[in-house]
Amino acid sequence: ALSAEYNFTLISFEKQEDINNSPLYEETKSICDKNNISWISFTYYPFSKPFYAFSSLLRALFKLFIIFTHNKIQAIHLRGYSLGFVIPLLSLFFNFKLFFDTRGFWADEKVDRAGWNKNGLLYNIFKKLELYLFKKSSHIFFLTKHAQKIVSVYNPDLNKKSSIIRTCANGNYFYPLHRNSDDVLKLGYLGTIDTAYDFYRIAKFFLAASKLRQKIFLTILTKSNHKKIHKMLSELNINQSFFRISFTRDLIELNQEINNFDLCIFYLNQNFSIKASMPTKIGEVLACGIPIACNNFNEEMQSSFSPDTLLITDFEVQDCKLILDQMLKLKHREDTKKNCLEIYKEFFSLERGCKEYNRCYERHL
Image (cartoon, rainbow, N blue to C red; front, top):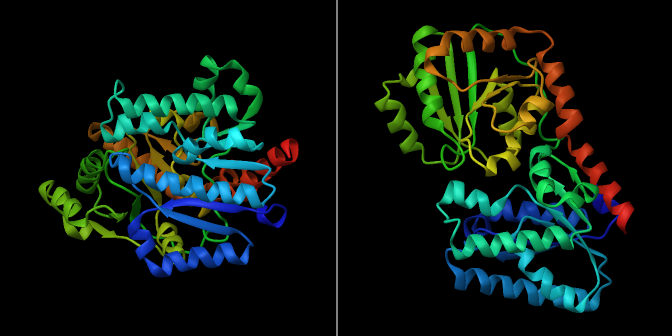
């Protein structure tokens, strides 16, 4: 939508497995070409392999110097942290506006999910980079008000140059489909089972739920190791007739899968970085008119949602019957789909995100 009014050059780091996935890579390139977006990709390497990571950054920096030299670039829209290292060097030679799309507290996520040490070199380098980008930016986008509030305590001026854009879902790909109602409570789990998430807690809850209610089914859509999940569920003595594990990259298939859920369920580990996070699946699920059951992992969950669209629960086994009753109430309410779609349009729609970006661009460019 934005490419109709602005000329974009997209610089990205892609994992080798995605580069090797020719159909996906070609489809992405085709979308960029159709929208007059010039896409230049480099191989992604984790910073645990510093030589490869910084050599890839240097190649990107060299390419950016060429682009800036031969084009009148007005702004850089930085999504995430990695390419932030090139901003100080580019600023020495060129004038441009910087829009920083934080996508969460990245360095703190590495502490909470990947075992980084807060006293370690990498963490402190990235926190200094983060502070520089906050000061340098003309505008900053956060995923949650919780994140904006945390940062504003240390940088009160940031409130004046920041706004909230949550993880938006494309309504052309995710939308409600007609489905026949039945007595089976169909729960869906979408995404990874580790790092940020506690899938074992979900599995234990589902075991208790399946003992209380025979008409229940869990669909697990994940790229995570399927054998590992099967082993976990088998060790809990969950009957295989109660669940299915699958994965798809196809958006049409994914939309169909989500539409078969009665609720999407997940549990996020509680820590500092999660306060700035908003899982992409939330917008996708709501766009299909499907409610969510999850824990209260940050302030956004209570401020943006109502009990008509979200069941806040810690999935405690001893509360299983009460939780099941609340889930069934959401399943059978006639206005559940309408309520979910209203929340999607207000907070998670692609149109809403594009309008906010466009307001920012018009203000600064």
